[in-house]
Image 1 (cartoon, rainbow, N blue to C red):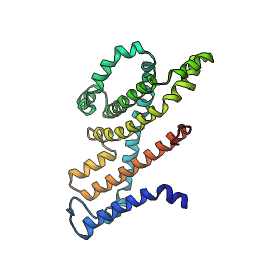
Image 2: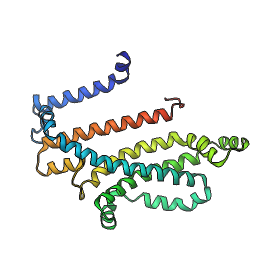
Image 3: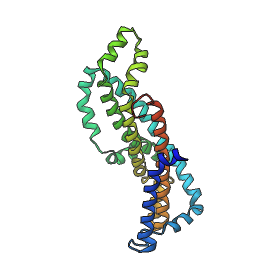
Image 4: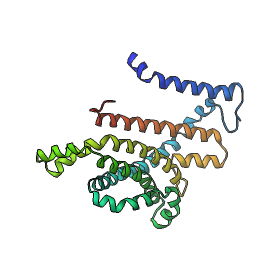
Length: 252
């Protein structure tokens, strides 16, 4: 119990302060508009009524998010490692990486919708692209900044290319790569919200958008809280996996 309080006490305290502050501003003093900012107690009571819609939306959103993010991790780390190791290739493609990565992904939405066969494929592409550039860039930077002494040691030990890649290069680059993966996961969630506003018939962002069109802000608030809880849970799972991978670093 003491360990739990030490580890999560600060988080819980901040959450309670935010909750109390919201209750004071809405239910007690009425500073905030009751129409736009409904009572938290009213919002919680709506949960059983909308649980089926929320869960269906969660499954739909997770399919898009997981598919796109996993594809982004695989493609970005693979290409980033290759380019990071090959200085000649890196010199030739870097200007194009800068040019294409500077294009805001939401601006490509019309092209994705018109060029890809389904709205689902377009959504996956947009989420993939948002995550790809972040992981791709951090992977290149992480690989090219590896201490040369590690590679010299691998050469002395006459390691094979595969052994050097998985025993030296990727472990040495993994802290920076995983930072990029963490940022990319958050961006993927943001891009998911954008993607679900075009042609989607279910999803967490679609749920919020749908009820906001009818000005049912109590249900919108429920959608916000549910989406935030899902994001926190996903990031917690990701951080747990990251800490296990980086158990050898000083902060783990």
